[in-house]
Amino acid sequence: MSTSTATTSVVNLQPPQKLVQPYIQTSLTEVTDILPIKPPCRIFFKNELEQPSGSFKLRGIGHLVQKSIENALQNHPNKTIHVFASSGGNAGLAAAYSAYFYKVKCTVVVPVICKPVVQEKLKSYGADIILFGNTINEADQHLKNLLNSVDLESVSPVYCHPFNNPIIWEGHSSLVDEVTTQLGKQEKQHLKGMVCSFGGGGLYNGIYEGMKNNNVEGEILLLETAQAPTLTQSLEADEVITLKSVNSIATSLACSYTTEQSLEYFKNKSQIESRLELIDDVDALRACLAYNKCLKKVVEPACGVALSVVYNKIDLLYKNFGHLHPDDIVVIVVCGGSCTTESDLSTYKQMITKSESKL
Image (cartoon, rainbow, N blue to C red; front, side, top):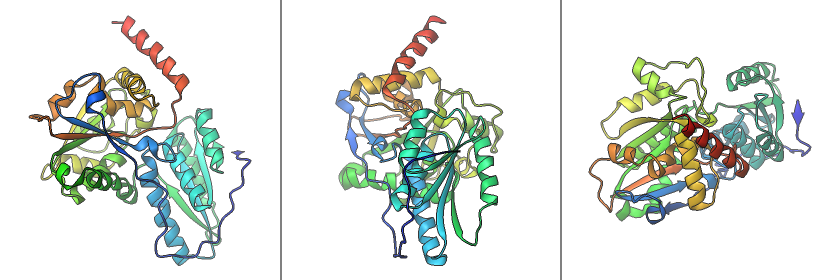
């Protein structure tokens, strides 16, 4: 086990009516006039990379931790609250930051291939890190074994799945609450839809619920990579399937399965129509580089997947949002990510060059 040198003291929280959530309101920025290719409508970026943990994951997982702590304080005030998560990336960082925010203990099990930059950030939040297994699934299984040995007489555990929990989706839906408020009543009428990357389905489920709650009758364009076609294959099979292998550079989208609720939402066209497109990993890398050139910020390939529709796959925007007018609005969720650094961008350039030389 590798642990942080920082100590996390568990505060004696009094059970209030409601704790302050750890996630923040992020900016909504119009980028229509600074994109390299003129889009058919107004394009806004919802900047989730501004979240303290680096990604949108803090909304859902922060909400889950908040609700779990409120419940523990109400029903088990004498127990020690301990957050547990298994993730080599943004879900683990969101859980660790949430525990840090509330000053409770946290343990994160990560695969042995977890990037050093992620491990250091986890430690900076005071989390205890356990390196185990080669995949997230193996790390998660080890975490569940740990949870089975927790003394429930003295500890109130909070288990954070990366995406499969209705409370997490409820937290993610706050993103749409903010978008509609930030646009205002007049502009909201022009909102034709939202674009997001698809991994396990947590963000999609939250956006779907948020659009429904705010009476937004638009479309959701989902994008995943051909190297991690989780939703694509489940839709083809008409049931949740588990991919035998996931080999995507967009590691944060590399989930081997999705949620039953995602399939149900996708099939329900009554108010919100969902569409799905596959792009190649290399297209996600191109979008990361274009975004960095445009806005001087770094995001993960998982985020580049969604950004590709305004940088290098704009044909998908025309294809999926038909009859767009110049004053119509499409919001792209810049989901962020802490698993990519400035130095990684040079590697992406080399990978793109290598892929092009094969053509």
